[in-house]
Image (cartoon, rainbow, N blue to C red; front, side):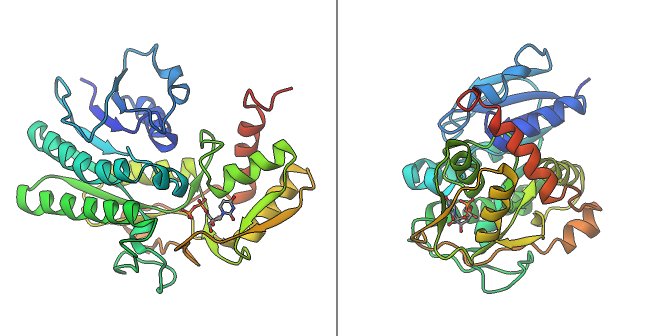
Length: 315
Ligand code: UDP
């Protein structure tokens, strides 16, 4: 009998890569998505498979799945600053009500549940790099508060189900990740810069570009999540690439890669944009034996090939 896994947000960037991975590992994958930010084209290649089924459903409402379930991966949520500014209430609901519904489902099915948390739980961090014992520096009423606090609540309720109901739970704190199937217009730095280069537009760097991020290639992240799910570790684990750069450097790397010679223009820094971010991955290394393998030059090249071949850029 194949293990059965429910993946919420299955039509999204990470959800679709997770669906691919678990199909490859021999699981029966049940994808669920309300498609407000996900896109069916990310998973259309899975529809012919008998090991894959899909429910068009919003997990903030009661979730029904027939049959047995061994695992639940909760990856449904708007996840870019532009998206959660446009959809603040849905963002809060999917992290809180959605998580509660799925924890209830996990409990009734005896399934193990892994939730997608985020480096945003650390806010604009004053500890650097961020390890899992740092409690964060978050503005609850700022524009990012709807995402950050939903994810913090999500961790809290997941831990409560673990301690109170003995539910098997896993918490991954995901740092900036990139790769094929990111949405071109989601406002994130990488698709913004690559899209601008491909359209011949100026590259928009926010602030003076001295803020830092650490970018992880999607295959590395998926490997970390896979290992965490199958581990017996229930405290949060950072998964990300510690190789940190400034956003200005990042823009310059993308300009060099695309060979388009675009110029950089500077725009105002969004409110509460974190000044620095780098995961401390000591825990992931020791507990999961995991560390990223794909360097930025390689990962950016694969990602650029994906964007270049999108219908809107194909001549
Ligand atoms: N950013 C930028 N230009 C853009 C989009 C983003 O300079 O067109 C900056 C953004 O202000 C942030 C960094 O790039 O400092 C990473 O942004 P992203 O939205 O990718 O992720 P997050 O802020 O959630 O880490």
